[in-house]
Length: 323
Image (cartoon, rainbow, N blue to C red; front, side, top):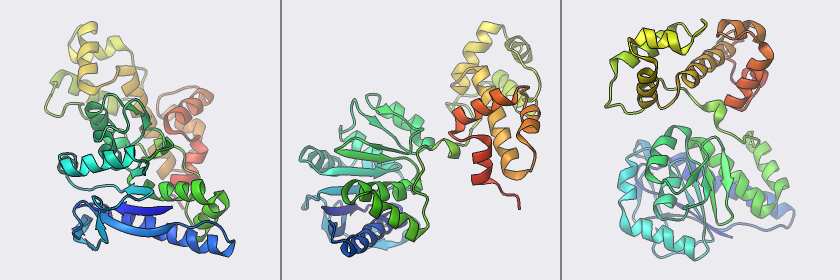
C-alpha cells in the first residue's frame, strides 16, 4: 500500500510525522515476520510547496496531491481556519476525485470536514472531534454524524474523532492492512492505548448558549441558578418561576437558547460535577451520587456510563488527579 499524508497550513505537525513514524515502525515489525509493508511513505501538499504547520513548524513535502494517487491518503487535524481549506476548490475537487478513483481517505478530527465537503460522506456514518460536531452537523446535513464514536471505518474512508485520534487512526490502518498482531506490537512499543472506542470520556459540557450571538437574560439567570443548585430537587415549574415566564414559554426559550431541554441540561450539569469529583477527590460513588443530586447509586452508575462511555470506577482510574 502506497501511503501519503496531506499537509496544509496550520495542520497538526505531530499528526503528519507521527502517522508516518507509526507506519515505519509497523514496517520494521512486519519485516521481522516477512509480512506486508507500507511503501512510498510521503508527505504531499495541495500545490507541492512546503507548508507551515501549527506553531509555525515548516514541513518539507515530496510533491503535490494533484500529481500523485496514493492507495491511502491521511488527512490530519487542522488548528487554523477550516474555512480556508473548505473554500480551496482545487483541493476539494482532488480529494473527491481520489475518493472516486479508489484511494482510501483517512481523516482525524477536522479532516472529516474536507471529505464531507468533497461529497464523499453523504448518507454515510462519520465522526469528528466532539467539539466540532455542532458546526459539522450544520454544514453537512446529509452526513450521519456520530460524534460519540472514536473511529468509523467505512471501507473506502476512515474517520477518527479527536485531535490526537490520529494515533487510533494509524493503529487501525496498521491492523486493517498488516494485521492486529503488528498493530498491537506497535501500540506496546510506543506505550499507546489502542482500545479507545468512544470520545464520550473526553466530552466537556459547555453551558453557553447554542447561538453565542443570542442572549436570553431570563434563561441565562435560570442556567446560572441550575449550575449553583444542581444538587437540589428541581422541577420545570420551579425553573419557570425562576425565569418569570410561563411554563410553555420557558420550555421553548430554554430549548432555543441551550439546544436541550431543562432536564437534559440538568443531567449534563450533574454528570459534569460527578466527573470533577471523580477526578479530584477520593469520595465514594455512593457519596458522589448524593452530592450531585441523585438518590439511587445504581441508577446513577447506569446514567454515568451512558453519558460518558465509562463506569464511574473506570473514569476515576483513567482520569484521577489524586495521589
